[in-house]
Amino acid sequence: MWFQVTDPADPAHVDAVLAVLATAPPRCGGTRVVAVDGPSGSGKTTLAKGLVDALGCPSVHMDEIFPGWDGLAASVPLLVEQVLTPLSRGEEATYRLWDWEAGRWGGSRTVAAAPVLVLEGCGSSVGPAGDHAAVRVWVEAGRAERMRRGIERDGEAFRPHWERWAAQEAALFAADGTRSRADLVLSTDAGS
Image 1 (cartoon, rainbow, N blue to C red):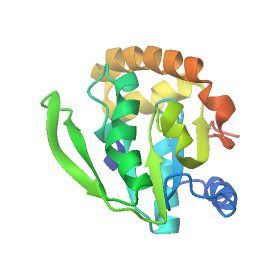
Image 2 (image 1 turned 135 degrees about the horizontal axis):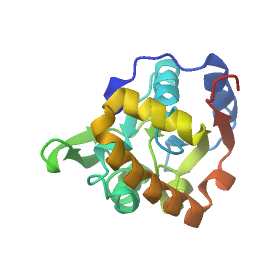
Image 3 (image 1 turned 45 degrees about the horizontal axis):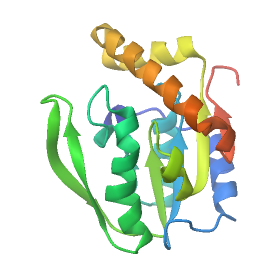
């Protein structure tokens, strides 16, 4: 989950995103949304944290919006309806939070319209969500490395969930062409 990240972002990756953002016009009302997308374990959250630190802007994490382990595709309409549409009107957005331990919706979080918003997580630039993004960033790493990172973070008991999630990612990203629509593609594999 996003709140577990402590590793610093690659400064070159942060700088690359900031360079693209510098000339990107807003596409969500007056908010320039930076959507950091890609498969689980690729390093999206680490990059997003680096961007938020550099920009001093708010962020929204898809981990809070996914309705459970089978909810990847359902999260995109929720993101658009609850977050991006209100922000595009210059209004604050309030979105429901998924309670992963209870397996149901919990509280809610409000995010104010701001000049820049970092939107992080699988599906954050898919379909109509991507239409609101000023900058679409695709973060990738090899499957084995991503799985290693995920199991290291979440524990071996989560492997079946990761496998199920990976199948949803592959289907969603293939149907959308998410990687090919990105403004910037970054690899976090060791040595890249």
